[in-house]
Image (cartoon, rainbow, N blue to C red):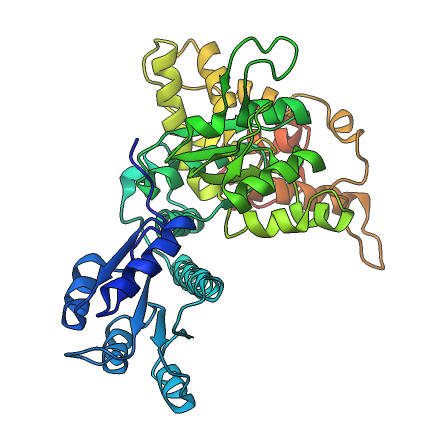
Length: 478
């Protein structure tokens, strides 16, 4: 198994004293930093950074050839977002202030204190991550096509907001920090998680675990595994999903369903990078990246005390929010033929032509189940279709448009209630405005407009003629 580098870019130690470099490297390695490189000649630092990059530079001030403060200026000029920690054998206030003014992140005095050293390193890496996050957010606000479209081969979209999310995923992919994906049921949260995994370049697997309805013991056993004899029936060792995700990504779906006890176990995994299989005394370490998803409002759960704040802040290092389908109707012309093609192949049928009226009909539906519901609708319609043109009837049935209007509304009388001014309109005026609005939403298609307000096509057509209602588009009887 290839060991995952931590951090993802090297910590560069620049000191002409080889013994000091070795001591610092040993402290960092013991504490989990395994991507550390020493450069003992200050003249080689800039060429190294240009070729290899770095997550931070630990730089001695006093060196031959090129002094540390001179090299600091060069690094800041060429790599302004790269944190530099200065090391000095003196506590000269002027020297320290001068280095900080030139752009040093922090300084540490020799002889080195391991606690102070680790605090400096940890703080610098966190700042680097925040800077990278901010750059990604700035990129997210711009309209970018993904640079690596293959990362999103299983997603179909032309929507600007979603494309910006793709660009954001490309930016945060290399990060080792957790990712929180939020969005309603059926918006494609697992697809986004898989794209993040592909963007990470990690050599390990993508392992998905659905946390919905799992109690504490099952969660721990599923995630961490167990050793033989851990409980009655544990006749052998079982490898947890976190082990299978080594050097890869662990995706936890429905994170909002976790109990407080399970949240504590997940928090320990995130903080310590270690876990105990059930029945084991010795902890194991994990380098898996954690991605979680939820369709619940975590902020409301925090207020209600149903979700731990410390866990939320750990998980929310990067946040991807996926919009519902009703906010991206412009994707229907791409999604509908895509799913029709998949469904026809699945059922061994010839390709169907999609009538223009179907796009209009579906653009007037809220899709509570989002893309998953659209796909299910299309597969159901294709499975029933006998002719060459995809019919509207199966969609109308699934949308509930074949039920009487009063039956559809009975469950929630106030849902979508109409607002009235101080003076109430007459019933004729209400009917007139309702018919006009239905025709507007239906693009002038009388059959679809009639379905939307629970009338027959003949009744609405007669009402339109009797009241001289204008059509915004050429009349279509469907």
